[in-house]
Length: 432
Image (cartoon, rainbow, N blue to C red; front, top):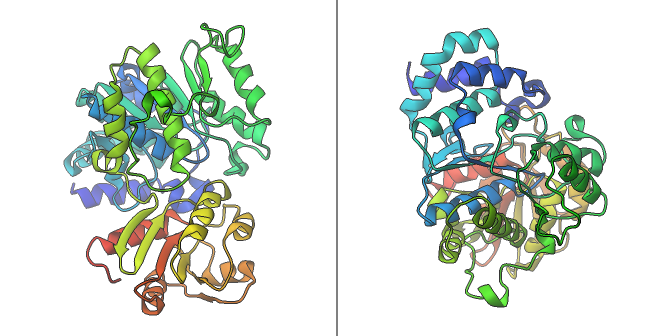
C-alpha cells in the first residue's frame, strides 16, 4: 500500500468531519476504547496534557508544546484539523508523522478497521497515540476534536486538563446555551487532575466549579492551596514585573494574548504540580519561536509582503471578532478580503462583525468542501455594496491580487479550507 492509497482509504472508508460534517460524528467512547484495546491501549501509557475549548485550543496546544520542546522534552502533539497535509495532525518536536508510519498503521490494522468501522477521527486518534508510545515521547499535548466529554481523545487520564474558552459553536452536538456547551467541554476534567480554564464567564463559571467539586480538585475556595482549578484570566498576567522579559510571541494575532495567558498559566501549573521541569527561559523561547518549533501555520500569518497578504484560521464569531478588530487596525489604504465559510457556522453573526467602509472590499468565495456556503449565499447574507461573488477560490485570490495596489493588503479567511488552499499556493509562489 502506498501513502496515497492509505490516505484514500482513510477518506473513503471514513470521511472526516471537516469534509462531511455531522455524518462523520460518532459520539461516545465505546468504539475508541475497542480500537485502543486492539492497538495495545497506548492511551494508558501516555503522560498527556489534554486541551479543549471553542477557540484557541490549537494555538494553546502549540504554545505549550513549544515551551516543553524548548525545555528539552520530547513532545508529541496531536491537533486537528490539518490545513494542507493530514500528517500535520500528528507531530513529534514539530516533525510530522512519516508517510511510512501512516501507511504501516493502515496496513497492519485494516482488517479490524473494516470490522469496527471507527470514524476518521477515532482512527487518527489511535494512530497518534500508538505512534507517540512507539516513539517514546516524554509528554503528549492532545487537542480534542469536538466537545470534550464524548470526544475520542477523552479516553486519556492526563496530568493536566486545559479548557481555553466557551463559545457558540457546534451547537447541534454540544448544546444551545453556553452552560450546556461548557458541561460538554468540562467533561475532560478528571478526578484529582489539575485543570486550567482560560476564560471565565458568568454563565459558565459555576459549571466548571461544579465539575471541579465532583472531581475533588476544588478546595474551600479559589484562593486556597488545596484548590487545583485555575481561571487563567484571573491569574497574574505573564508580562508581570517578575517576567517583564517575556518575549513577543511568534503568533501575531491580537487574540493570541488570551492563548498565551492560558498556556503560561498551564505551564506554571505543570511546573508546580505536574513534576515537569520548565525553565522560564524555555517558556520565553518557546513562545518566541512557537511556529518554528511546532510547525504551526495559519494564525494571522503573513504570506506575502507586497501587497501585504495575511491569512487566519478564525472561523466562527468567537474567533472572528478578534480578526475583525485587527483588520480595522490595518493602516493600508485598501483591504481586499477573500472570505468564505461553511454552513454549520454562525455566519449571520459573523457578517455583523466584519468591518465595512470604503477601505474594505469583499470577494466572497466557496470553500472546497460539501459543507460550504456558496459565494452567492455569502454575498446575499452580506447585503451591502462593494462586494463580488466568485465561486472558485483560485479565481477569487487572483481577483484580489489583480485589484490590490502594492500598498494595499489582502486578507484570506473565514474557513480553514481557504487558509489551507492559500498556504499550499503561496508555498510555491507569491502569485496564485
